[in-house]
Amino acid sequence: MGVGLYGTVRKCKHRESGKWCAVKSIKKNKVSELETLKREITILKQVKHDNIITLIDVYEDERYLHLITELCTGGELFDRIIDKFESDEGHFAEFEAAQLIRSVMDAIRYCHEMGIVHRDLKPENFLFLTSAEDSPIKIIDFGLSRHEDLEKNGVMNTRVGTPYYVAPEVLRQKYTKACDCWSLGVITYILLVS
Image 1: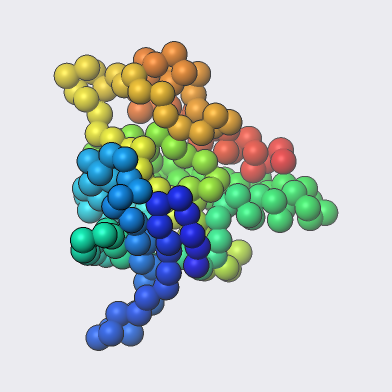
Image 2: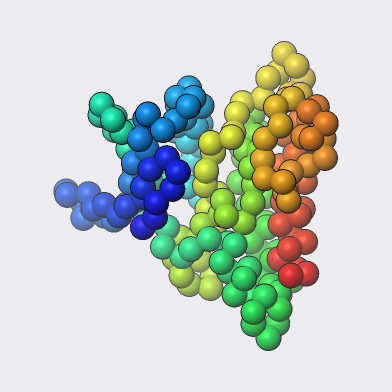
């Protein structure tokens, strides 16, 4: 299904149930900080929300870490934005954008209540479950996510994220979980104005 810097994503089928899933195989020697990857896995095991990718299982061998997730076949939000931009409308209808953002905001509220900050929200990190127009949307890629440090009142200082979507306070290296809200604001703007 895809090849990235750290590994590949393929379709797989559960032998007993016949259910299709996705398997992301990550080459361990390509990952500079294995602890970061393990933190992502820990977070994905904790979250259970309709608009967050479901981690089904994890397998490890000598060379690879295999993450089994639900299969999303509807493509990225980024691709749907491009399709809308190239259509006669030129952007998402306000109602469509509101539905998408409401779903995503509910998932981020859920994460924030658990003390989890995504820190890399961008259209490429949202997948649609199916190709249907009204398909559920799923947040993916929790690689830069972390738990809030309550001893520091939730203040973080590591510069992370994607430049177009990152909050100004992240660049100043003193930010909170509100950085996710900034990123969603940028995405909302893109949906409505592209």
